[in-house]
Each structure stands twice: as structure tokens, then as C-alpha cells.
Image 1 (cartoon, one colour):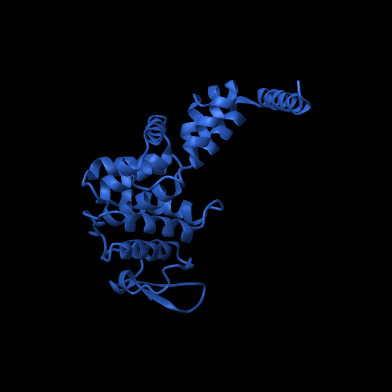
Image 2 (cartoon, rainbow, N blue to C red):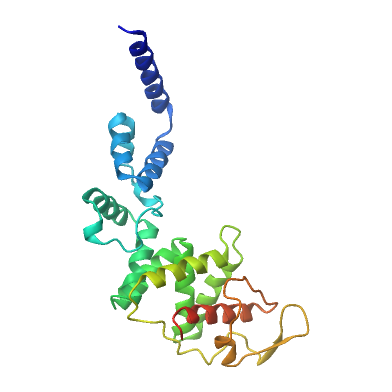
Length: 250
């Protein structure tokens, strides 16, 4: 046997031994990462080792797979059979990104409003940042009772104060999604004349500037890409809702 063949066999044996020593959860994470970048690489990976093939059956692969490499709205004629099967499996396993994407399309494009709202709610309560943003804004804009509006505000507050996500980047990703859809249902703003702040005026930003709670608060927004904060937490909610409504040119 040639020396090069011997070295190759030794290397392959060492790699297999290393893979076999890895915890199942780590193997599932590796396979999940590969899947999000290339279906071809996923196929090769699962063929290379029985442990990787086994890891592909782990629900964790599909539940936590990042889908950045997949189109926000996959078109059947541009999506391979393997990709379609993978995305379907992700949906079955409760992948929050898939649920969020379906909810966005259902609510704003295909007019399956109730189903879309439920999907956005489920993804939001499951911890998906963009879903939480949209769901909280819809509650603040459309909720018919104060309790639901408060829930929307509280969810927005969690997002605003999170150390794991930038509110600006979250808003921009939602904006990109909205631009990628054919909008047939813009956000309803029956609460537009209302304010979360109980006062008609308040001290904002820690200074002496007064922010008047009028219609103009919703319309005249100049710094869409900036994370503006007010000393009044309710003004924060009003301001962000104004930005969200602006996405739909309300």
C-alpha cells in the first residue's frame, strides 16, 4: 500500500474517532449549521459519517437551524426538492424563524390574518426577536382593550431593554421583510389617536423638552435608523409604534 494511502486512511480513522467522541447535541449543532449554508454540503456531511447521518434526525437540527441563506419567501420554481424537504421539516419541528416568516406572509400578504397573527404570536412568545417586535406593535396599534395594549407595550419593553438584540437592527430586518412582500394588508391603526402615556405632555430625554401627544408624534419621524430613547417609557412605545406605522406609509 502506498504511503499516501496509508496516511489518508489514518487521517480518516482519526477524524471518525474524533466525531464519535463528540456529544450528540454538538453534532446536531454542526449538522444544523452546515444545512443552513448548503444542501449539497449537508448531503456530503451525512454521507461521510454515520454519526452525522444520525444527527440529522435530531429535532434540534431543525428547531434551531438559522435560515439566513434561504429566501425570505421561497418560490417553488427556485427551490430544490432537498431544500423544500428541509424547510418543511424545520416547520414540523417548530423552527421559530419559519413560523415568523409564514406569519408575516399570512398576515400582510395572503390575507390569512388570524392565522398569521397566531403564528407571529407563537414565534414571539417563543423568543423570536423580529416576531416579538411585530406582534408587540400590532397589539399596541390594534388591540381593542387596554390589557392587550399593555401586553404589547411590555413585550416591546423587553425587546428594547434586551442585551441580545439591537432594536434598530431588528426594525431594519422587519423593514426588509415588508419590502420583499406584496402588501395586501397594511397595519390597522385604530389606536393612532391614543397614547400609551397618560399625560398630554411629559418631560422627555431627561431635559426640559416637552413631547406633545398629538397626531404629529406618529407622522413626523426623522431618525428612522436611530435608537431614540425617552425618559418616559410610554413615549418610547409611542415613538416606536410611529416608526412601525411608517413602514406601511400610514
